[in-house]
Amino acid sequence: MELKRVVVTGLGALTPIGNTKDEYWEGLISGKSGAAPITYYDTEKFKTKFACELKNFNVTDFLDRKEARKMDKFAQYAMVAADEAIEDAKLNLDEVNKLRVGVIWGAGIGGLETFQQEVLNFAAGDGTPRFNPFFIPKMIADIAPGNISIKHGFMGPNYTTVSACASSANAMFDALNSIRLGHTDVVVTGGSEAAVTIAGMGGFNAMHALSTRNESPETASRPFDATRDGFVLGEGAGALVLEEYEHAKARGAKIYAECIGGGLSSDAHHMTAPHPDGIGVIAVMKNCLENAGLKPEDVDHINTHGTSTPLGDVAELKAITEVFGSHAKNININSTKSMTGHLLGAAGAIEAISVILAMENGIVPPTINHTTVDENIDPELNLTLNKAQKRDVKVAMSNTFGFGGHNACVIFKKID
Image: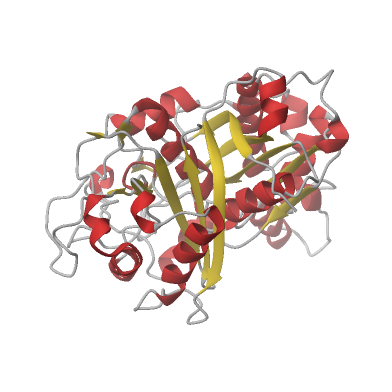
């Protein structure tokens, strides 16, 4: 069976450094940090008092107030990003065959704030279970694609992939395969997360996963730097419209890039720590290259998982050197989490958008906040430190890994 070609025809982004794809891109190439003191709750007793929150975002600018109240923030964010991507793709919703349009989404946690609030309300009461009737529909991770499909009438495959921080990369790979195999013509894919809550921050602090650089939040996310001390939690959403190539051509759609492959693997090692030798990461990148029919030397740019954790950053870069050999030093490697923080289940989506826009604009966003060389990292690797670099990017890879040992990778190329 000959696989169908799959292209990207729409993008939408809602991030801590920009509330549209264009604002997001401007934030990336200018090296903007999205980290700042938390405004959502009192952080006095928390170890970490900052995060990458959305800025100047009011959901009622995008959604009816009554409808928005029925959604957790993660689902609201999904709706906003998906609407932008659908509009960007210029899909004619009156003409497209909606039976062949799917929504495959990613979320690592889902409606955490809703769950938190309902449990707190119950605990503060007299023991009578007075729960909001929207509690479960707001909380469940699959409600985001459900709401997107309901709004637009998309009747193709509709579900959420949950693989921690690899969730939206998993979703993109599923979407790619759905179109490749001829099951769908169009899939709205991506991911969203809204975990900047007392439960989210408290939980990650208890694991010692977060940076505690409270005196300088904007510099706290510092992937590959010797002084990194954990990741910075972010929130938001990213959405992509993937479309069968001939379907896109027939309607004269703008094509950003071709999605040519993906890969999945497992570390099978530890609940939260990466394998120190990067075995699963090596496997996922090799799987991705094989799936795309590429050689290592074909790759120009890699957006790493690069969370700014002491173990993870080193393991990933060692894996890149293992897979790409001497060519690794010719690749523009970066971590946009230095600017956006870690959006958990939405990370793969916004980082895929970053590599696609890097191809379109011929410039690779920087890894900001690097001041101190880590002797455990190969000095010949080009980590795109502190300043964007011009580069004709023809092929770009995006890596995303999650607690539980989940590894996912997607790869894009300039359209022929």
